[in-house]
Image: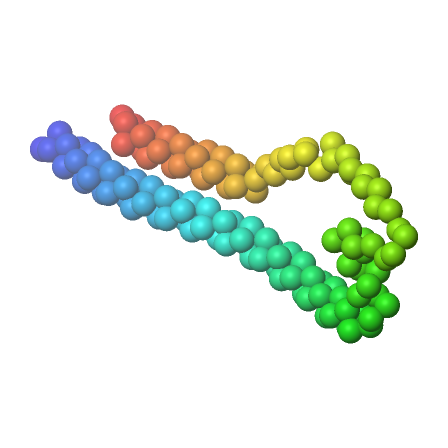
Length: 139
């Protein structure tokens, strides 16, 4: 009779333990997936904010350029500098600009927050699995 109670109890613990483990793993996976999506949305938001800021500054520059182009003296100088127009008796000497090598360096952006969230998620999952394993295999 004592063996039957122990066997019934261990089967019940094993059943509910594995069910609980699957539920916990599912929720942890969902939490990790949510954290990854949240991180990607935050990075997208920050990039869009910087793009908006750049576009607003470009708009201000274009408005200033538009007001400058209404001036006939500025328009004549602009055409001479950019399109090589000359006045009578002037010569055009064209100088080529060298490219700046510092602009060619690519910017490396490491997502430390994402790696940290995945690591914590993995460690927490392993701890839960270990606890459930120990609980089901106790004598």
